[in-house]
Image (tube, rainbow, N blue to C red):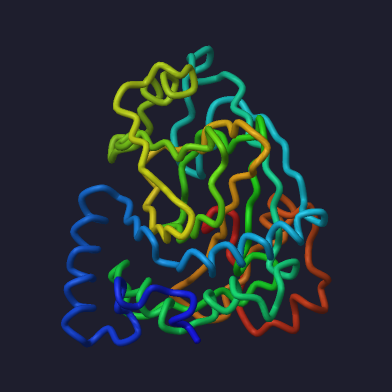
Length: 282
């Protein structure tokens, strides 16, 4: 039962028409508009989130380890690049292990939560979207990332409207989600501010408190953010849920290769009745 996974007393989202759900949505809209992030602490029950973490840990030996270093931050098509010689042009490393959807147990609790229509409808309501659909992508619909000792997710912007994640396991130390709001505005990227983040000297960095079982919705198009280096032998585990406004969404082969180190067989791609997003749309 979904009530074994989600604390429906604290988060009454099974029926969004009831007054308690409407009150929750009102608070959620306010927080997301104010902070660009919504944190639902204790959304998944402790026993359930521990089971989800074990599912991920059992599959991790087959995960793709992505270790890459770029100069500065990745910018998207049409954005003005940093001036040559600017302080932002320093190494920016990301290193983590990534599990694709086909490596996460099909009958497990993590996938059960993602497949629950009630969650999809709730995310749509919070995001202010009339309807959302779960991704049809066999690799990228629901994924999990592990960041171990000394690893991190470097500073970056998101191009997605929002990212939905569920923290499954906290590290012993480090692994802090760090956000630098308004690093990008209508005028473009604030390269000086981004450079200070890369140098570790930025003021105004926000560090939201995330605990295992916290569901979050984050709008990171204009907020520079990262996960700081993990310290200790307990990995930071997080699951990512992918949605789109249209049914049948697939990611491109370039995205698959970059995230998972492999692509789908063309027969599999053709068998999915959907459409493909380009890297710029992801």
